[in-house]
Image 1 (cartoon, rainbow, N blue to C red):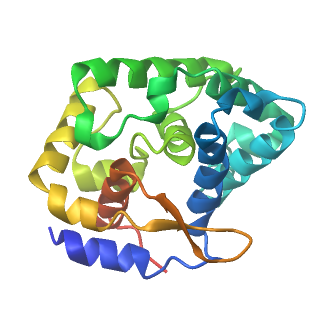
Image 2 (tube, rainbow, N blue to C red):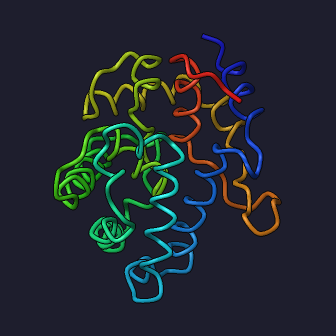
Length: 214
């Protein structure tokens, strides 16, 4: 596998109006609340609607509102329980990244995944839950078809997260070098907020799994 080639292919398709930038805008929104010390405000009367919109469009842009998906039948109000879970998440969830997937770090990742899953009345697949975790916290790759094929895993869980942690340790230099800044919605300029290590790993195996870029 050529990690550099995969990342070049992915990042070459990232521009302000392309769907790949949907991650940037969603991630920027949620992280801005964390950085200001008030993630609880995401679920306030002022923050709830915009948070639901950001999350819903990110998921739509990344294929979660197509075909027979239940989300296709829902309004943004459907996402309110998810925002409440996110707003009340433990502070350490916002800090966890692939360079530190110890058992002590993996436990809260599995816990927040379970809480997000139960926040949706119909439950949620690994794909949906991990896409939410990626778009909001940046703490895990999205376990979609392409990532799972490329990384050769079948489910999201402790074993897969340990494997991701090992991959990071073996390729830390190239992964850290490709932690590019997110794009700002208003100006199209690069922000001071960088992609997480888990996001970079997500990009590597999204391409490796066969997703056409562009």
